[in-house]
Image (cartoon, rainbow, N blue to C red; front, side, top):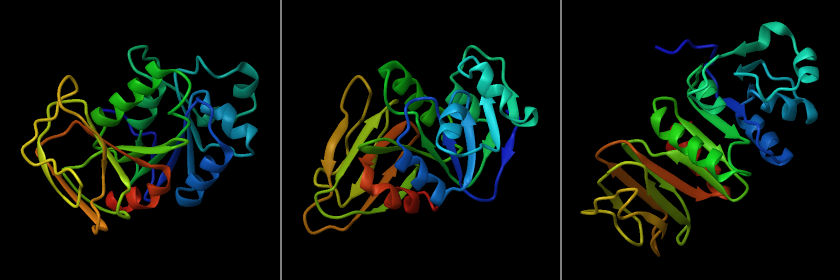
Length: 222
């Protein structure tokens, strides 16, 4: 069982070490004011004028001068070299929803590792915010209010089947697999303003345009 370090009845913003745009962090904090940093994300927070209420990770990406500027009680070191800092942080918080900033960008291997964590830690709802996309692990059932033509990409990290309403290309009867059929660049059907997706198991990533952040939050009950 994972130890919960930060428990919140409100949404949490989780800040990673990849380059995070100031406007993305500001928007996330306007929606989820509790700020937690994953390791080197603490340096980004301080550089943009914020102090996290907790810093979680193995601290190998946190410069000594940054660490010294923070109160010792907010530093939570987890000595685990088999998991990413995103994994360490996400499994250590408990909130209705986490908005992750600074986890998409730079190295593709880091991005893929973070998407893997989204699926493995789907018990903690989380949306990753990037420059052009928002990404989440799709729950068993969700409803999205989106304009016709809006991009709705589905990418499986496991074998998944399901059903849909309101997509231009329905997913009914398709067996999705990371090494087989995938569902990128689907879109909301003409005349539809709502998409319903029901999945028979875990493992599906949902990728939406950046402007669909509000719709993604609403779909997760946020």
